[in-house]
Amino acid sequence: MNELTVNDLHLDYGTGAHANQILKGVSMHLQKGEVVALLGPSGSGKTTLLRAVAGLESAKQGTISIGERNVYDGSKNFEMPAEHRNLGLVFQSYALWPHKTVFDNVAYGLKLRKMGAADIKDKVADVLKNLGLGHLAERYPHQLSGGQQQRVAIARALVYNPPVILLDEPLSNLDAKLREEARAFLRELIVRLGLSALMVTHDQAEAMAISDRILLLNNGKIEQQGTPQSMYETPETLFTAEFMGSNNRLPAKVVQRDGARVRLDVNGTALTGTARGAGGGEPSTIIRVEEVKISPTPVENAIELPLLTCMYLGDRFECLFKSPAGGGEFGLRAYSKYKLEAGNYWLQLPVDKLWVF
Ligand SMILES: Nc1ncnc2c1ncn2[C@@H]1O[C@H](COP(=O)(O)OP(=O)(O)O)[C@@H](O)[C@H]1O
Ligand SMILES: [Mg+2]
Image (cartoon, protein in one colour):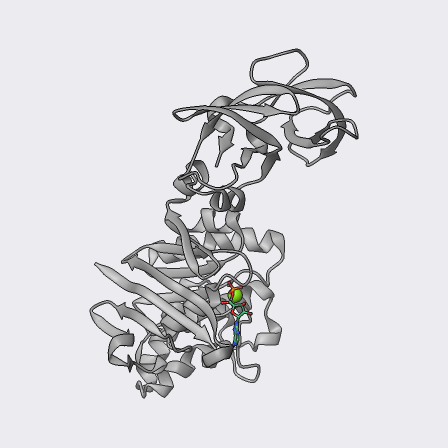
C-alpha cells in the first residue's frame, strides 16, 4: 500500500503577474517500509515539495494522500491543516528547544496531544533507547554533540509513530565523517522500525547510500526516478547522467548513427559510442571518470593525450590529460592506481560506456 501519494502537484510562490512556478506537476509515491530520497540541485523545489506534503505550503493544483486519507485536493479546494496530517518532520536546523531537556524536547508533542504522564514517560524512554540516547535524557541541547542533537530531532519526529517521516537535509549540518556514520545509522533505524521516509538531499552519494529509490527533481519536475543502481547505471537523460556521477564531456561530432551505435569524431580521432535517452537537440557525449582506462600503448576506441597532472586521493590518483593549447583544446580525467610518469597515454573509452545523449 502507498503511505504517501502525490499526484500532479503544482505550486507557485506569489500570485498573478508575480507568480513563480516552483512545482510543475510532480507525481510520486512512497510505499510502506520504503526510503525514498528526493534529490536535486539547489532551488529545484525539494524543500517546497516536502513542505507541501507536510501542509506548510499551499499548492495550487493536484492531490496529496497519506495512506487512505486525502490531505490535499486542489479541485475541491480542500486542505487538511498541518497538525492533523500526523507526519514526523526533521529539518536541517534541528530546531530543538534550548531550555528543555532531551526528554522534554521529545515529550513536548505528546503533551500537546494530552497523553497521560505515565504513557509519555514510556514512549519517550522507548524512542530514546531506540536512538541510543537513553543516557542523555536529562541533558540540554547545548550539552550534546551535533550528531546527538540530530538524533534528538529524529526522536522528536518518531515519538508519535507517524506513518511517514519527512526529512529535509537532516545530515547536512554534520561534518563529513559524522555524516557517513549518521547515514548508516539512519538507514538502519528506518529499516529496523519499519518506517516510511522521504528524505531530501542534494548529495547524490548520500541519496544512493540511504534510499531504496531516488526521485531526481529538476526545476520543479521529476527528471527520472528509480533504484540507485538504475539511476546511476542507466540514466535516461543527460541531466540525470551528469547529476548522478563524475563525468567527462567530450567535444564530439556525430559522424554516423547505426541503431544505438554512434560513430564520433573527437578532434580528428574516430571513436564509437552508444546512444542513450530519447535523443533530439544538440548531441552531448559523456563518459564517467571511472570508466576511462589508461594505457601506455595504443588500444581500441581510444584517444591519445599527454598527461598534465595526477592528484593523490588516498586510495587512487585522479589524473588529468590535456590536449596541447590551440586546435580544439580539451581534457579528460581518469583514475589510476599508481602515479603516472609524464608522457602520452591512450585513454580507452569503452563503446557501451561512451554515452551520446
Ligand atoms: N517562501 C518563498 N517565497 C518565494 N520563493 C521561494 C520561497 N521558498 C523558496 N522559494 C524559491 O523556490 C525555489 C525552490 O526552492 P526550494 O524548494 O527551497 O529548493 P531546494 O530545497 O530544492 O533547494 C527557489 O527558486 C527558491 O528561491
Ligand atoms: Mg532545500
